Length: 225
Image 1: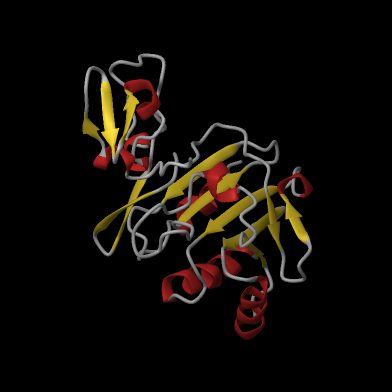
Image 2: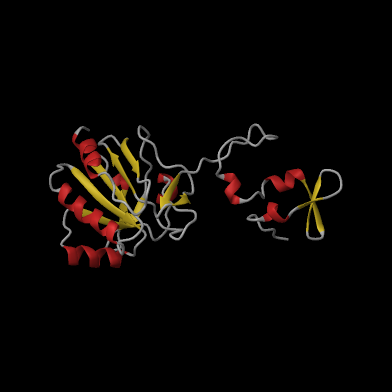
């Protein structure tokens, strides 16, 4: 029998001894432990009666003032950048391993079909012209065809558009997947700068999704590394 993991604890009721009731069935405390609500898993901290069970930390941002949880912790400066595989406009893969030895700027955002996201791509396209030996990658879950159409229409030539529509693990590795809110499933707005050795030297998770990132901060990080 399959049991729902999400919302299970909400409907469980105390039963005889150390057991809990879900419908007509009783389960002991240990069997319930792995079926806690997803929201509990990401709150951080340690389960009181399970000192060795550390919960995953969840980063948060806002969308028009309302809190939005991310499915994990946003990547930190100083760590080795995780490998990834995205999809270019010609449907061929773009792997981080192919970019090593050059500086990389990841401009991450929800969708090109929003004014702020489109503005960020235009701005980074201009900045990229003044950042030698640097690859600027525009990352969203838009289809590659939408990326191609936007870049052709807008004359984007200095940015590499790359799609995460195949859910290859990029959003989890960099901690940018929105776990709830109106844009659930899309990528949060963030900028990550990676140096030639593959280390993250700048990481900005934009607090309010409807606002633009710190372009100057990202550019300075590139120039100083």
